[in-house]
Length: 222
Image (spheres, rainbow, N blue to C red):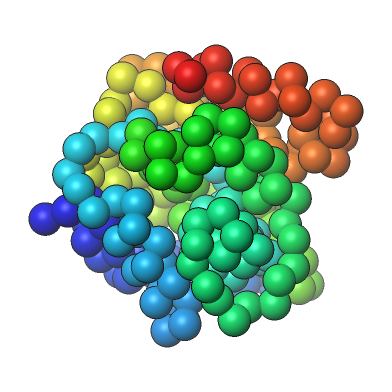
């Protein structure tokens, strides 16, 4: 079975069964037929083989990137322009997606990059509160309640052809701390390499964006 089919099966079966804090909602874009159809096109295009990739883990999907398209760090603009997958979604830009695809283009383009890397997240489902994006670590109760879901999701993805010598963690603060503690317990990966989160770079370090792109490339062996 090609990796694309394994990924799509994983995404289709995603379901968070946990007691969440008040007013916290779950985003599961994979239940939307239009979104899942785009996911199929994306993963069939870039992952229809069975050779192993290195895993990149973000935080959780946001409302205007992966929460729309179902593809991590890929807003509707990047999905169409960079990946060649037409879509009818509103062409709203998502900052993290802008950075990621500038980095991917510097790496050699989506074909080369996705041939070597598979992007997911600590929580492959996203969260909202009061109609705004929320990170899993923004609420202690939420962080605690999704623990089993996170462990199960990572373990299920490790059944893919994924290299376990190193994982790249997007987010050098709370996301890295959380993954490090979990990894100490679960022994998912031999080494974790933290990288500044794309949104942090685009919001606070925009003048040094090119330096961050070069760091990504160095760490990823380009």
